[in-house]
Length: 107
Image (tube, rainbow, N blue to C red; front, side, top):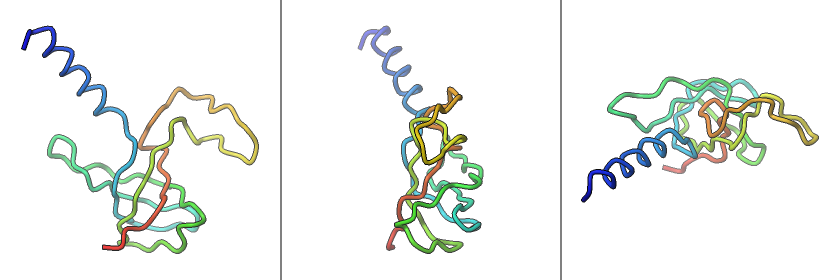
């Protein structure tokens, strides 16, 4: 493999690792319509920090501490989420800070 090909392959892997799409997580605490969660995937051998106030979608139902949930990370920031179209006003994309619980695993 040519050195330039290896460089671009590593670059693509590095960029891809920075994009958060979805992950399994454990519920640490529940606060009504939100929950604090801890992603279960390790990164470089290290555990992730707890994500605070992940939104819980209505169809998910009751979420309890200790549940293993599936979490999606939205394409854009949810800071200004409302019932009407809104401008996210932030450049944050695919951030773990914009976590949404979409289901509970039945393990």
